[in-house]
Image (tube, rainbow, N blue to C red):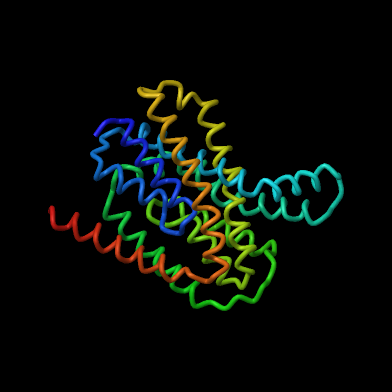
Length: 265
């Protein structure tokens, strides 16, 4: 399989699974394994980060009115609902930022096509979604404590196989937060982290050389386009309380991937 076609597949996988609660990082590791991607951890992480930036951009497009409203409120230079929302977003970012800075090398080593780890974490995602499906929606707004707890869930979801959107939305729903607000908060809270990670790596010279810029660009485009579709779809599904289907899917993929790897040994 050519590198361009591989990038297209990875882009589509990332775009669909970033927003659907089935772990984009876990599916990327599975895709890389079965596509025969033998790149080193640093190179593999470059593609992963690039595809995450693409879906972050699609989030910005889908929630452009919300983001514009937040900026409008911030530039009013007074405490208002938009300022409060921004403060909660910043608070939610702290756990993942701390984990990312303190354990950067250890995190990179997780992205080496460890399929048994991915399978186990997909099963964890399935459990989270199952509990969230059964939780009652009390329609509560996001509090500061909620924002911190959701942020901790996002930090844990750095592990490939644990869905970031699944972990954050499930945590939100289990806390009784309105499902629509849970999806909105979950998708918006990750954008600053992804862009911050990209900026840090560029300044550190991590991505100074790329063997195939075209392949990276193609993956970015396909991740962005499929991300637009999946983001809008996920908002409707969360509001419709249909998380059980994704729970079942995660269990099936976890069992299939785990059984396949164990059969090889």
